[in-house]
Length: 220
Image 1: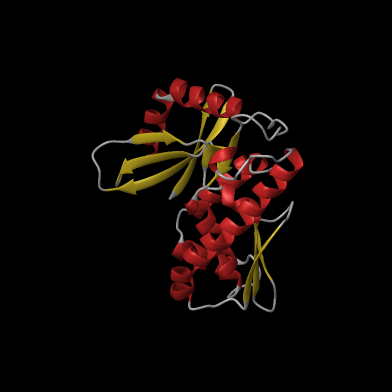
Image 2 (image 1 turned 90 degrees about the vertical axis):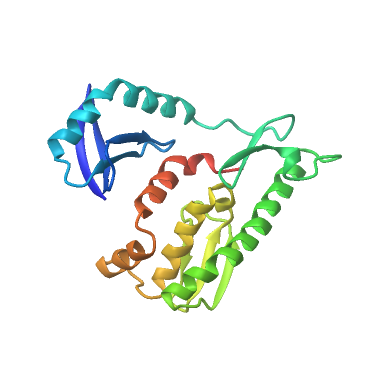
């Protein structure tokens, strides 16, 4: 993947360009503002930027739409048909937990317990193939509450994961799992760490971008 930049109106836009066997250039903008350009092998930067410029109005419209959707989240009332995130999708509260005869505080606590239990199962299911590929095994895995970290790896090989990750899409959870497993081999974020992470998950920057932009909405 190659990064390019282009100015569209008053915004400097970063493009993530992927070259492959294909006939045409395509441009997509996801919900986290990641702009991906897929182009035929050998396409010049000039042609790519020209194609993106031609789609400028549509790209900016999508970015504005994303910004509107990322307004500061409202305080949850834990009633009615409010939307709650689970594995990257929105659900009504009653679709996730039992709501009868509970007040707001009880529902909030029950939802937190649901996320903790769910993430524990999800991590246990999804971590195994990555452990095999990296040839590592953590001493223990714990689901915790954290305001600052999505995951951590201690020097004695203990991994922790933020329960709020249960709100993220499965592929984003996978990114945090791989990130922490790579720390079993490289404790620091040096070049060796990023090379190893990239060898397992080449599109890890997309997952980082999702957490950076959407993390504030992954909360109770």
